[in-house]
Length: 296
Image (cartoon, rainbow, N blue to C red):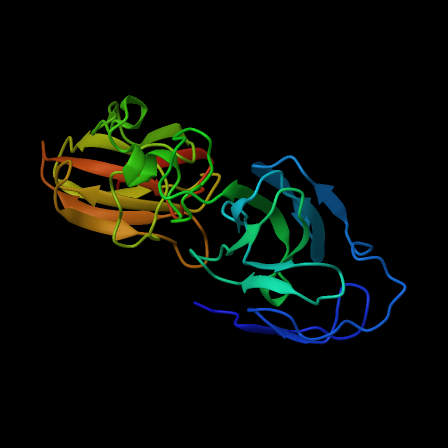
């Protein structure tokens, strides 16, 4: 994990003098540039989620509607993000900098008054690029809306994954939720949505992981069975348990440098196990594919 504790701004435009994550760098030099001349887009529809893509650096002018502690996170982005909040384009008055908060996502919070306008610089660590999600919300002591896909208490847990929401009917955990039936090989597709029930944290995944789907599988004969998620639309984790809330028998995140998962397990005829298909992080989204084959 990398923690970015300082940053050097060189030149003019969207840059300034040297700065750290805690505050001002001194008196700004005289400049003809307006405080927000460097922005690539403006955003004032807060709280909410701004989406887009980054090929270098996205410079976003943000105006907040209320006086509060405001949190900004890149949860759900598909690359290693860096996030910096500043008072203006010149780089004087840095409000916060973060690289890795949960996994490769970034998070900064700061106290703002209604009508305040700030600059958010969003870029990829080491020049990485991809699709981003920038979440903005008033920071609360606990999650108040368990269906808004916002981490409003800043703990990295969305909606049903947050302890504040765990007892709500929509967050009830059903295990197993599905049963794998039919002749081998088996191929099933299911959809995972961020913010869904998240009762199982595989040992080989991230903390927090995302919503999961559970499947009961009964071996038709003794042998070695392979379970994999090849064909899934996001970074998966697969685990096999001896029963719901039971002992983990196997777990895998990535096969080599690929983002699908695979485990093999010796099973006896008529032995039933629980197969868990999970998202590596809290924002796994899309179709998850589960394949089951008898290898020998």
